[in-house]
Structure formats: structure tokens, C-alpha cells
Image (tube, rainbow, N blue to C red; front, side, top):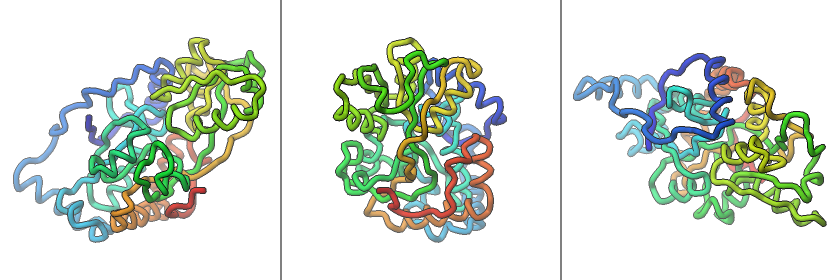
Length: 317
């Protein structure tokens, strides 16, 4: 499934719609539309692409094969509002797509998202299916080195955001959960292949009473377990937890408890063999930080708390 970044409705409308989508977990990730809609054909389309590329400040920094095709293919698990999700018009929306659009303008290429399961993204990139991965992926030494199960082959990471984990519970906090220590003996949901799953595993070692872990392929499935009272808590990324607290059921379904846990950088993954593309992406991220487009996107999605000032490479620990 591929999807083109297009202009979307206002942030207020998208936030409200995505809140309902996150609660139900009914994200429609097939049939993302005709990829040829509105495209120019023949020489006219080529002239438009060449004109865009010629005015982009970082186009000449890209590898020749990317310049020739005019597209960077982005692997992503598009079910993680507000970072990336399908909106009510079945279009890609969120922090990552909007940042990618700004990055693409600096590079003079289209950023085309393809949906996949989170724990297969780096493997797919290293097998040539995607050029990069942009999917709220925490930059860690294990992923850099390929020691993580979800990052076989390893990757370099251009860091562009910072977030930790959070505990999301039902409104009113009926189980009186305040910290990871309170999860012992409880049913706790998290997404497979994420740092949040790792938190449950580490906490499990400290518990006298075992955690009943529900590990889902999609974060939306974890949220559904909480909504339907089949889980006592969800561990998810802080911006995702906060987003669900604010939007789900008009703010009446969930709440975030405790402090943000282990804040770390999100990274855009690039193959270790493609340092030219990595460096071009880093320059593009820094450019949108410097020109203010980065701040505009984060403000639109109420994600300013994760802002960084410098686009680093492999800064994760």
C-alpha cells in the first residue's frame, strides 16, 4: 500500500477525527487512493519535477538514483496518532507526514509513505523495499547495531524529535496506577517491537506478581484493550498517550498517569550503506528546524514538548 502526501483538512478537524479513529482501532489501511490522481503526464510532468528539483536547496546532496526517480520511499507503521495515521478521508496525516513534506521540499523530491508492520520496517529498508523509515522509531544503540529484533541489519538514525513512554489508564484511574511498579499483577498492553514492550519485560523482572502482558501488532489494538476493559493500562509513547487523553471520547475515556519515562530521540532510519542519503536527510531536517517549518508542524499537532534544536545522527543510547 502506498500513499501520497496531499493537502489535508485543518488540524482541529483532523485531531477530532483521529481521536475517534484511535479509540476504535478501525484504521483503514488498504485502498489509499489512486496514486496517479492529479499527476502530470509526459514531458509536462518531467518539466514540473525538474523545475521543483532545480529550486530545492539540497537536491544536489541526494544520491543520483534518488535524484533520477524524484521520490524517497518511506516505510512507516501508519497507525500511531498523532505521529502518523489515516484520517477520516483515508489520507495520511500526523507529525511525521507533515515533517516529511517539509523535508521533501528542501530535498526537491516527493516523500511517498508505504504502510507496514513496525517490527519489519528496518528489515524492509535493508532489503531495498524503502529508502528510509520514519515511524516514531526510537534511536537506540541496539537498533543502530542490528542487535534489536526489529532492526535486523542495523541502521543509521537522523534524530528529529524526542519522546519517552507513558502509562495510559481509564479515566478516573480505577486501578490507582501511578508508576511502573504499580503494573505488577495487572494486565498491561503495548505494541510489539517497541521500547514500550521492553519496559514491560524489564518491569516484569522486578515484580513478585507477574504482569499479564498483551503485546499487539498495532498500537491501536493496545488502546482497544484498555477501552474494552481487557487491559488495566497501556504503555505507549508519551505524545500518543497524551493525544488519546485529550481526544478520545472528547477527553472522557483515558488519562495519563505518572511522569514521562526514559525520553529518547526518534530517528529517521537510513541504511548504513547509504551515508549520502543519510547526510542529505540530516541537512534537510536541520534546514526545517532553522527556517521555522519544524516548529509550525509541532505546534499544529500540539507536540512542541518533543522539539529538538539540532538534527543529530545516532545520538540514541
